[in-house]
Length: 87
Image 1 (cartoon, one colour):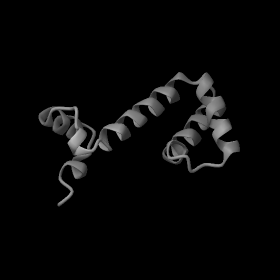
Image 2 (cartoon, rainbow, N blue to C red):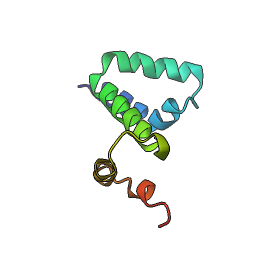
Image 3 (cartoon, rainbow, N blue to C red):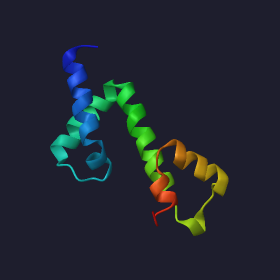
Image 4 (cartoon, rainbow, N blue to C red):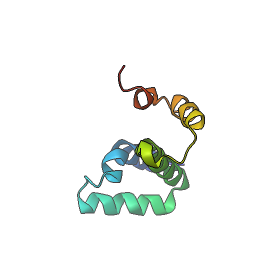
């Protein structure tokens, strides 16, 4: 991996949250999507991040994950604040 390619990965990871939330300009989204086409590592990070966000945002009444599994997952991902927001 060249330094230029590594720099592109760092830039993508720095903008990942905004990209997922649809908060980036269209031209920057196109650059990110072009990078994702050629970088399997960044695609894995993007997909994992999207899945994590989806798990966090499951409404409790629609929860399909057993509570004990959900708690272990959130603790493993350091998302304890979502489990216990009263802290």
